[in-house]
Image (cartoon, rainbow, N blue to C red; front, side, top):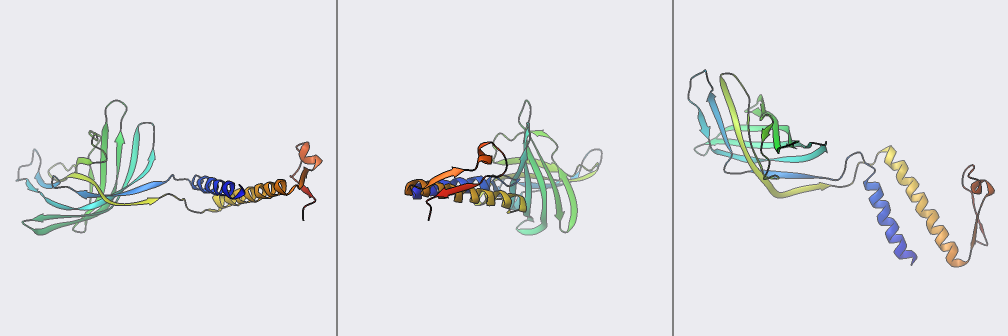
Length: 224
């Protein structure tokens, strides 16, 4: 009986400790770009020049949930590694980070913001807050630099791959370590009381404890 109770208590302690961290258990999901993804560059009105569209865009990125508010779920975008090719020849190497949010008050909306390095040159991309996200966790959204004349943009269509890593135990900080030690002490006291009851040992508390004063003192009569 004590062994079964100990197993339950151990599980309770583990679950309690897992809730002590500032961040909840999270899943880092790896995404693979789909064949619908593309990259475009060229002029936007009033400027006039050809717009080139490249449909050979491959690579991956990862998304990690960070927090939520009453309207949106927020994700960190990281480990971006894309390649834009032309006729099978690599044209642009892309790396970077960003953020993604999905939600809304009335209609479902989404926004993707990226800080990218394209062949080593830093660029910022933003989709703006746009309608969409109904197929989430599939991501389908366009981002652009938003330049007035010559602009570049990505059409990002991606879905989770089979690669994901789970982080369920928070970092062991001084704060949650103290609470964990208190939980362990409580568990030890519980086992002591259980064993004392099974062996016929009488447990009495101090008068101060009975009056709610001072620390708890436990005296075991007949305990060896």
